[in-house]
Length: 98
Image (cartoon, rainbow, N blue to C red; front, side):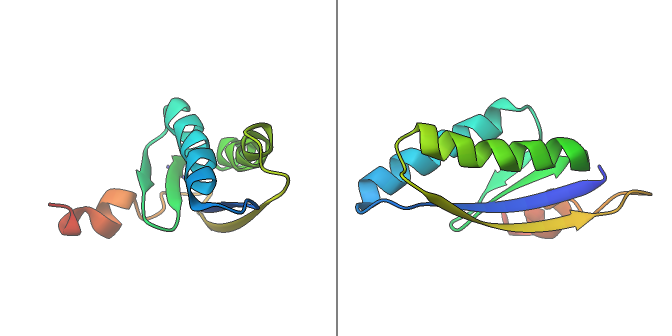
């Protein structure tokens, strides 16, 4: 796995229930991609090929808009290692999972 991307999608909506509904749609899309992912309280991390992850990041914005957000902001963190493997989700947080 050459890349790991953390995405925090922030739909511009007024109410927490609507925000959670839209973010849930974004996370459902990420889950549907088949890549390994981890949902945290502030962001979702995905592992896989760099170019494909960048497409997923782009589509996450479109999904939030189609789900009803008038605008969406995103905070993205990228770890990329074209020759080799980045540190996996499991190696980073596995020891903390119950």
